[in-house]
Image 1 (cartoon, rainbow, N blue to C red):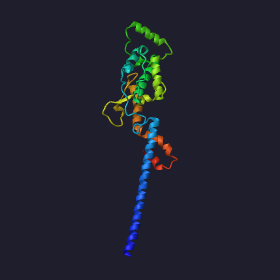
Image 2 (cartoon, helix red, strand yellow; image 1 turned 90 degrees about the horizontal axis):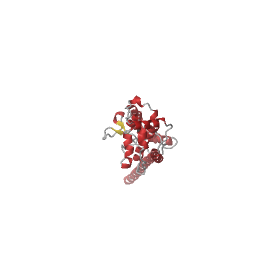
Image 3 (cartoon, helix red, strand yellow; image 1 turned 45 degrees about the horizontal axis):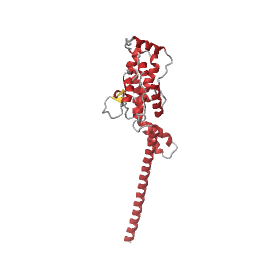
Image 4 (cartoon, helix red, strand yellow; image 1 turned 90 degrees about the vertical axis):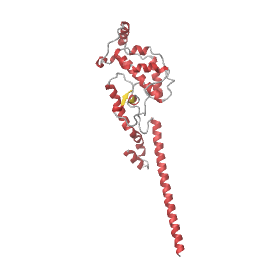
Length: 262
């Protein structure tokens, strides 16, 4: 009798252990499937909207300069753009700028840098004569009277016609990026660097500097860096905001709660 009772107890215990083990395995399987589903959703948002898990729409870095001799003329103009705008020589510089191929732009960082450069040059070229540069401390015009005469001709010409050597590469770059050929909010996202190259974290306004500028003023700098900093701090919330509506009518309510809390 004792042996029989022992056998029954052993069998019941074994069955309970097996049931517990099966339940644990199912729980682990459900948790694994939930993590897989979450990773899949996050990856689909990242791929579709070109966002990252930590930075959101803000890239982890921006290209500070295009390498290659063919792009040196662009970089030279953007380096001196505030001065060229102030002294009225940008129009002449762009009109004698050679045509540059965009074939050497092979990745998104290069395309974004080209977009920033060409759009800055475009807006400066089109609006240069409408800006009261004297309020920004305009230096005296060059003493070359012939150059002054040419400048006067450009000032009188309206509306401006964008030269092919600026318009063609800009249109090609924007086509590849899926953007219109004008400055957009992308300038807030793709035109910054950290003052400390070893910085690793969410930057504040004091940690950032713009790469390129039309005026060289603090007003323009902070006009772009303030939304850039906001994007940096809101970055981790971007993907959850995309995913939350998807789970409102799904059985994964705990996942929705987690997304909203985050």
